Image (cartoon, rainbow over all chains, first blue to last red; front, side):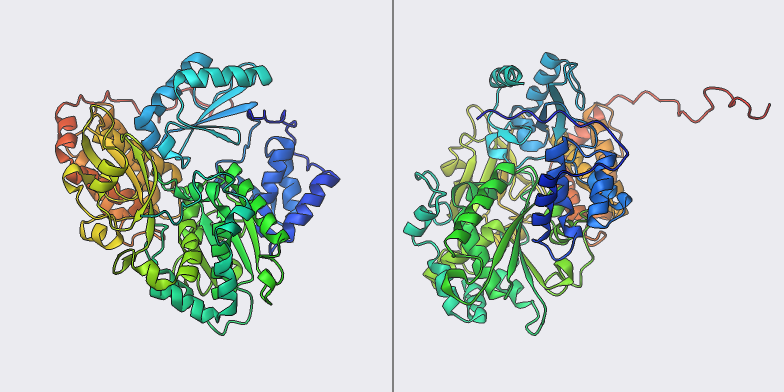
Length: 174
Length: 437
């Protein structure tokens, strides 16, 4: 199954967003797993990222109000972890592993290949908003290096040719 | 050795609960539930199982640290953060045999009298978190876990909790903070998690591979487990081999085989036309070993004797094409990125080491650089920081400088001076309008 594109990101807002009932229900379910409301913060942020595409200031406000925390506390947690998007991401985020095992098995070449074929530097998006390149630290798939994580999926044992074919396929489905 | 932990790998439908039950699955939990919790712990102590996450602490003894008379709830946490570079064994276990892990968690929870267990899995492992959630739902549906597990009077709930991308959350107290919904800042010890852990309650944190060993210890007995390997280093071990070998991957072998056997026999030797230069024996945080040290046994005590550590069993193999200065710079980037920033020696030290190694790799090394690196490493390790991340970056980098000093010196000898930059401290746009006029 090919990787699903991410949702088009909801617009940025500093006004607290209102959660819809479906999301509310999932948050209520998550809260039953923990003895404190605060412990649900990471799972709730995941649910919000799934729903809104990224964690905007407005989402942080709403999460904070829900869990009875201050927005500053929520922002502190969001920015500590690398996987919450604090800016709208592209449809496909190409996360190239930079750490040793991948680096010595072709990871560096793979990153350079993406840079030259898509014309983007790490952190940047293509003009059409389909691809974004980021360098990430060890993904825990060192035996099948080099590895690229695209959105939620791992693609392992990659070569520039395999990656080209993959990007064409993803672009077709975007 | 007949595979134990990886017995399901390559079999059809290996993840299904029925496949696991047909292979004798959940017999261990059923047997444990008829025993006294302390007897379960005693069995694990007798097996001499040592933690597979990196520290190698005796698992059964860790369980005994939970206060016996504590009235409130206790928790078991399965550490599936798997973030040590070079390590990819837990993923393999979850991929092929998630029920074995769930049974291990249930037995361990029973032994420490916990009714709730969390599996803290790294955020990137979306697929494996889903596999675990499905497996837990399946086991709960068949009443193997949940209320009155396996028809006993014991309740055990297991929840999957996804991290969000932070190496530090593999450290047990940072993991606990993260599970509580905070930043992953490690805590000072003592108090140890077994006394004051998650939500302020007694907590045991065990690695995936450690917990996966537990059902086998209960069904086949501590004696059988201890007969694999050698005294104090017992049982099967998953070795993850990556880098320049012919067949990288996860290999299950009796603990204590030599690195030569792992690399030459099981991984088919070095890839075509290359020769071994060095390897990391247990993830990138273990001191590097040279090709001459390949006959060391891959177990906790032998590695410690050789001045390194078995860690997580992630063997990263480097051939002669690898420049050690560049490899050190690569790792310095990793640790500088992942330092949580609480302790100055680690936060600043990893950053400075990265800057110096980057400069050396770019051909601008200075004569004092290798010694400066060693000094930075000395200040960041051996108890100067709250958690072992300071040691985790200091040990590999200082060992690389010491064991491959000639490469560092060569870089310095052939270096060109860095063009001097003017510091941007002078006013560059003139006085602010309306200011001082």
